[in-house]
Length: 529
Ligand SMILES: CCCCCCCC/C=C\CCCCCCCC(=O)N[C@@H](Cc1ccccc1)C(=O)O
Ligand SMILES: [Zn+2]
Ligand SMILES: [Zn+2]
Image (cartoon, rainbow, N blue to C red; front, side, top):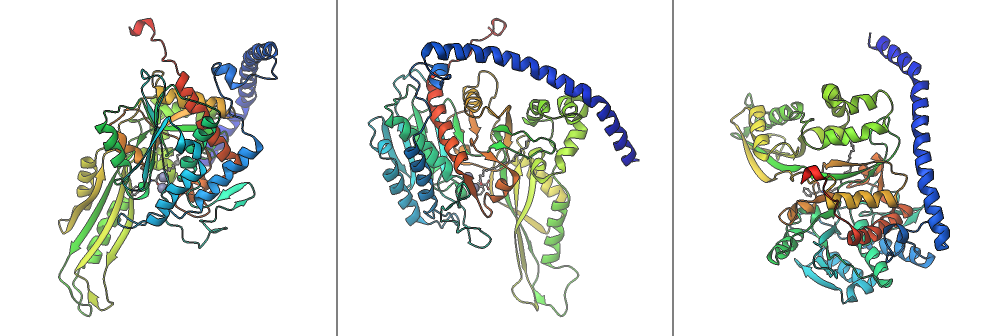
């Protein structure tokens, strides 16, 4: 039956196909002629100004510095990242990190980016012993400052399974390999590198900005980001927006979508670490009771795993994400995504099929730690399990706890909240949202091959939540192409970044900083007044 229906759909589709293709060509034709007109105008402009093509200086303003780097600079750019990867700045736990490496990283930044650290425009402060705050003074105090963020601690990387040692920073086949190449030394280095290159070219910003580089993001951000945030708050700083890690230019994440799309996350999930504990009377294993602490706890966690939290598709920014993406899909997905008022039930089910898209539609339940028993012939008194929930932007910690209690439904299982925080409020992505618009414009100019920019949800957590008191514009975006394999390498094995990707990240930040100086607020429409 299903097979027959599929055949019919295919026949229907192939019947329609020539028309759809024709329509596509027609539309493409129209676009091309529009583009041709713009291109002609730009060529005319270039001819008049005596250059071969429109430079970004011509598009964005007379004082613009073009993002072109010499061969020597390009070598220095990648060598600087390799050196950063070689410093094993590992965060093992809240209590334990490689503090020698964290301190060495601070020295390394000063050595590699001397212009940044000696500039009279920049105030550098070390916060929480190892984190860094740079304040870059702009010339126009009427412009609200913004902040670029990144972290340089990394998760541990045992050598097993890696093609090259994880702290070697080796270049092979056009890629720089190692822990932190995507998460998140690439951003630390790219931000400082872009600023170094701008300052060398005598750049001085109009809009002030901060650079916040955390040293403990991988274990909480409490000693780094949280302290920087408190410091800025005490100084009365309000940020127009901030940009942090958390999303990428996605490639091959959605079936049937071959073209890359840039996802700027405007929401970040909350989290709840919950410890479940069962205490029973210990005893001899030769005469076991009907139920043991291990059995009771196992049944409880199994119920939690087998009972997913509710599908929240329909609330939050995901509907908008899919609506915007619908144009990029072919039939019939374009119709499904473009008409969610009708197809929401089907699409919400489709999203559940894959573990990454599933994480976008619900609070996830991950059983991560399980402890019980010490000896084979002893019935243990205590069994403990820790569960990591990532909370959907439309739910709260309290709601998730209530659901957990109802699913566990066993008074012998005690619940202990180890840590929790609410999802971040959704940041604006409309035409007046300066952070979103700046990122979008910069993506379009640096990555012309990326047709579409969409708002999204970050399924992991970042240091940015510590700055929610300073701005309502929190944008999570790394200007780097990422495939599902690259996603698995983050906290996994064989993390790597292509030299080309990294150079483009530097270029992107070089452009973004300049765009922030020339950004013009959109003029409100009359009917909005
Ligand atoms: C329709 C669109 C489909 C697109 C799918 C999107 C796929 C997601 C792709 C990339 C997300 C990468 C996130 C990278 C950021 C990682 C940050 C991180 O690892 N944070 C830690 C912080 C933490 C939390 C709790 C305890 C300690 C540290 C984390 O979240 O685990
Ligand atoms: Zn990270
Ligand atoms: Zn991480």
